[in-house]
Image 1 (cartoon, rainbow, N blue to C red):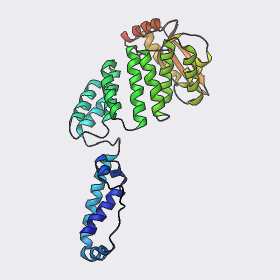
Image 2 (image 1 turned 90 degrees about the vertical axis):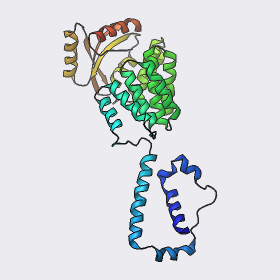
Image 3 (image 1 turned 120 degrees about the vertical axis):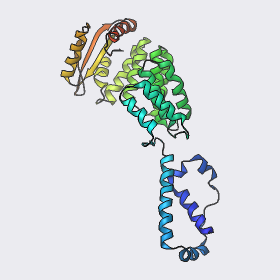
Image 4 (image 1 turned 135 degrees about the vertical axis):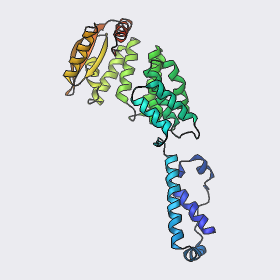
Length: 311
């Protein structure tokens, strides 16, 4: 019996999934190495039948599988109806329903190991609904519990988006820079640098904004943000545009123009090229100030058109 307990304990310690569980890791003996008792081996060899060995191995494999699914960060409970409901609503664009389902999922014990990711989803719902102030508390809680640099980077990038939408440019800039430091290359760096460039341009720091655009064009030439970044890095003007879409397919760009024209908004299509990566920008402008561009963008939104101000 003593040897059976020791073998079980040795197998548990060898399981990489269990090493990640704080409660188990804290109870693990760290100073005395496990030593196999040599005298117990003959007893185990003759006392345990093959049927018992097979049943024990099967049960133990199920135990380890359960431990692994609980310990892997980001594991998804595919059978959980609340989480499935939330994901379905989120992907369908029903953000209010998704928020409610995510919140109910978090409130149902036991707390999932990937709660910070769920909070990121809730914050994304608020951002898409145009409620950045409500997104910030969820992002703050997610940051306190985030255990991985890439997740901290994503949460900080979303925090930057929330502050940018609220008009707090200094905090937005700080969050974007921290996101780049925390997440390194694991986050959507080109998108974060584009948003950072926009925040810098709104503060009148155009040289720094152009430097960010240049980095996007040079380091991420296949990114969808590269064509606009290459254009803005090359031009010396200090103007803003209202962008209604950026398309690789010229037919889709023409369709967006027709949609805007039918709603009383006159736009133009600007062909862009970055490292042989072509795109068609549907936009209005240029505008001398961000305030004027934002007013034009708001006019587009009231007519049912998606619009964003870009430097």
